[in-house]
Length: 198
View 1 (cartoon, rainbow, N blue to C red):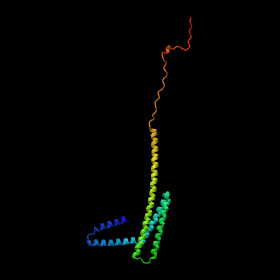
View 2: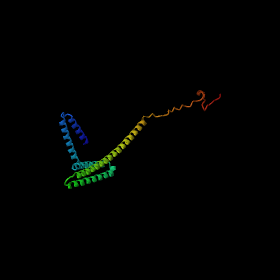
View 3: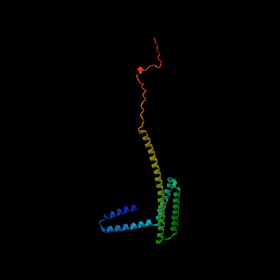
View 4: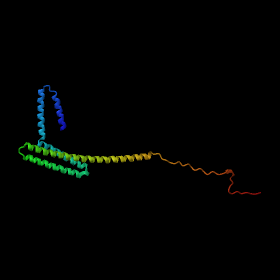
């Protein structure tokens, strides 16, 4: 909403520069200021703030229910945030009852109601921030597990590839040579010789 307001302000200021007459320019500027003040007072009305607060509380409740499905480990923490949200809803309901019981709004009551509703809105924002942080922490934990698992798989695959591609260091064994016969084999005499004398 703040970005939209800044955009509209920039467009209006640019439009004022196109008005050649100073009288018309100041008249348009005065009308714009009156409209801006009226719109700001409308946004600051307790009834308008309560309507926006109820919308924020419903969105925050949906965020808590979704977070319980995503973060089962943090169920207790999320349940505590849900209790905080219920307390804010009760406070908002009490403010509504006080507004209904008030017949005529004075400036003091107007300011008090606006302050109480703004305090409830800050509590809802704090609850939503805490829940979103819990979801992000769980998301980071799951991502860390996925990273660790993937790195382990890659290390295993690299180790397997290195095992099969590494050169084997096999020692070459030379064949055994047969024992040489010493001397001239022709001079070798048989073990049993028969000699006959004439």
